[in-house]
Amino acid sequence: MAFDWTTFILEIINFLALVWILKRFLYQPVLATLAERRAGIERTLNEAKDKETHAETLKTQYESRLSEWEQEKSVARAHFTAELTEERQRQMEALAKEIALERERNQAQDIHRQEILKRELITQCNTQARLFANKLLSKLASPELESRLVALFIEEIDALPDERISAIQLGLEGNTTGCVTSAFPLSEAQQQMVIKAIDDHFEIHSQLEFLQDKALLAGLKISLGAWQLELSFAGELNVYAEASGFGQ
Image 1 (cartoon, rainbow, N blue to C red):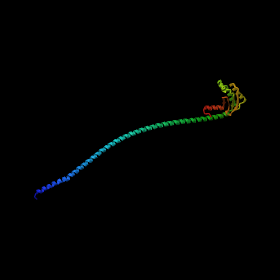
Image 2: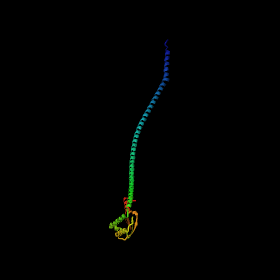
Image 3: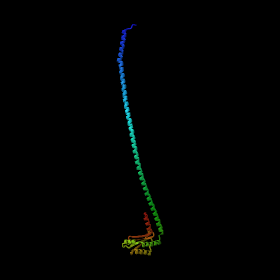
Image 4: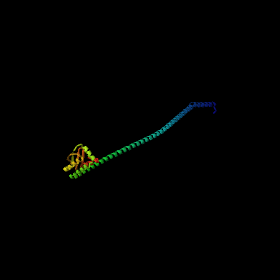
């Protein structure tokens, strides 16, 4: 077959036309698409980097805030612990004071109760002693014993000092009436002995009434004006009761 230059040139022209068409309508759009896709990928990567940077910033801020919060929490816990310790100490001191006051009140109440009990016991003892003494003296009381007490009574009048006699005379103010009370009836002789003792020592002429009171047990009591003198078992018991501070 003979080589045809015309056909060869036409084939070359067709090939060049095909290349131009491909370049014009296929290769350029593909390159544009690829460039646009690359730009999109780069934009996405940039956005991802921005988000990563923002996330790192947020993380740093969060860690910083978390650290500050931990410090604030530690300070608050220390402050609360200090306040709690102070309050506990204050409460313990208040409780200790209250316990001490309560202990003092209890001690005072115990002492008061013991004192009352002691006084009650002493009162009971004195009452029992007085009842016993009263019963014993009642059995011992007799006219003979009273005679002895009358004699002793006259001896006491004889033994009065001058100052005492002067004071009694001044207290009588001219009153010479009175009464003599005895547990047993006094004989005429005993009455005269009493009258004589009074008249001699006080330099008066007394007018005495003689009475009987068994409550005296034994002995006698003289009332002359404002002056009184007693020597009896009952009187001695009363003196004992008053001296003990628990008289009935």
